[in-house]
Length: 463
Ligand SMILES: Cc1ncc(COP(=O)(O)O)c(C=O)c1O
Image (cartoon, rainbow, N blue to C red):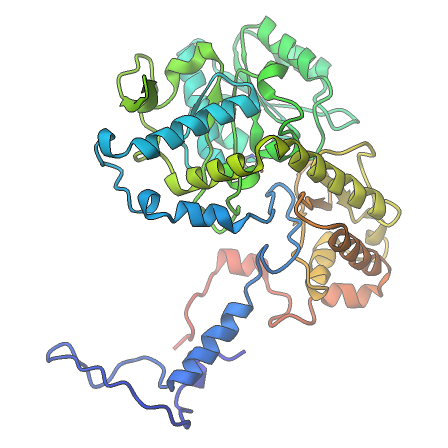
């Protein structure tokens, strides 16, 4: 498809020109913009808009991202003028509805996770992790200097710990893809502030020995942290607070109805047990009688971690979603887990499955069988585009070479899962030359991803 600059000068159709009149000195005779008629501009941008791929247009099995369909009612509610046009500095007496919404959302998140208090301020998952590590730092002061991280944790976890000056120690996983308890026992000393577990982990596997893990960490006085970004696998089924976790974050932009990706906006609320509550960021929304207010004076708080109250619109969407789905949140997670297991078993005869056990909301395959023919994970991901699907997450988690990480989510019907499985099975049996040349039906062919990242050229022309 030609750039709009390349189409310039071919303005032959008749459309009445709109005569915009700009007074001197604002009007210019020559402008370096494409010379095209209105209809050509409209067609160009309409065509461009159809090249976009999103969860509203197709299957998006991007592991670790929970790209589920988000009901439009949540967007409608977030756009209500009473929410969308409310200035964050509006006095408390005129913003009771917004304060009530945040107060209630905190309570709902406590109920869903089993924690005692939440801060809605962090604006992303990694920001929630950082906030949690700051809480651990405040709790221990300089007394403890290390954080333990399993090799199956999300990559942002070690980054968050290191940003707060902790030394990061990796714990190896065992053959079932869970934390190796012997390794943990050896590493868990009184110098360790926290064990940060992604549960279910990045292999899509639930930590089977979670209560034993909690005992090992607590016996040495450490904190147990849950990266709860994968809550879509657990809602209404199990609660991190009941399993022994002291602190956690959620990704509202995964499980609770805001599309994940594109750089935001998101929300990564942090939940804690009672003994850590006073460390949470301020202000806290409090209720006295039937009035809501902001408490800025919490002794021990780590202070503010973001402007105002976090990404307020995302909070409204999460609140609407939770109220609309209600107790059926359990069905959401059950369906997410069922869909993942269904797809995993359909694909197992055709692809290598390194951890052959019931998965949570996602699973990891590899292209080991296809490697024998010279086909690699990148080729399979690109070929999926020709079949009209978004590619899964690839080459992640790092503990699995040639990984394909697939998360179908609960919002996909069985027909879509079957269609995706059929495409994957066809690709597994296609001639290697074809798969390696993919994509062949997309507007552009295979791009040089390394050059795009390292030498980006964002101009339309090199002149
Ligand atoms: C398990 C897990 N933890 C943390 C994060 C980081 O979240 P964010 O991208 O909002 O910073 C993600 C992102 O998808 C995740 O999947």
